[in-house]
Length: 92
Image (cartoon, rainbow, N blue to C red):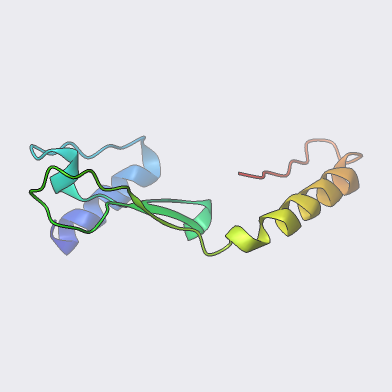
């Protein structure tokens, strides 16, 4: 995908739910997905392309070791904001 096309998709995705449809099979499309502001990334396994062996997806979760602390902070924040109408805290 060219840089211009990537920018166009990114701009459209800002305003609308967006999917990329490829004529390639998913294994060949080699897409990466990220969530939690880049702290949870899943990508295709890197290995021989045309083998029958099944590879597992590559996971990169740099904040994984901090999840217990994030959960604790989330609970503290929920307690702190419960008296503020309309206030919300997300923990994805």
